[in-house]
Length: 182
Image (cartoon, rainbow, N blue to C red; front, side, top):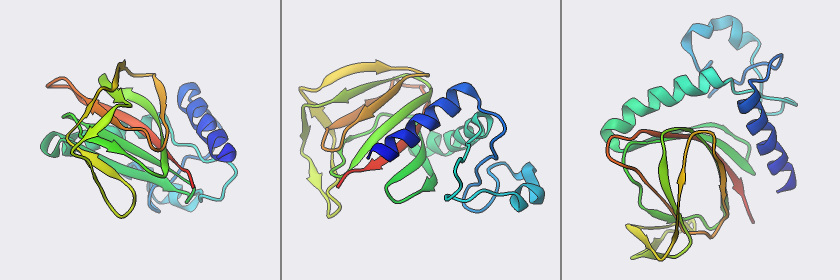
């Protein structure tokens, strides 16, 4: 957990500082942006490199592409890297989500676009738990509500009920680091 949180801290610093002189990350074996071309592929990084940068302009381009899909489905997402003990993902919503509880994953969210109401705690109404220990339901009762905005960084610990509520017409985008808890 400590190593994963240090990696999360490095990611937050890279996103906020626009770090330079670090090779950009590659997504699913190909550059995130097509114009990066074959030269970038020849210089690609792997998950085992000491430092992997996800350039903010690439993240914003990818979030914009996911927003197109989210407008028809209500949400969309992509996994940038999966290191086993943690994953770096992008999440875009255009409508409110249901309530959920992750049995074994902490969520660290870096809000990039839009605002939302985050409800945490309380009880998941009519919750159903699947084989992976994930619980889903339509809403949370008696939870704590707070507004989250671009630039906010937040954590939701494993076992904590949570739900994102959006105002109509809002597009919400975030970088999400999922940290596995045993």
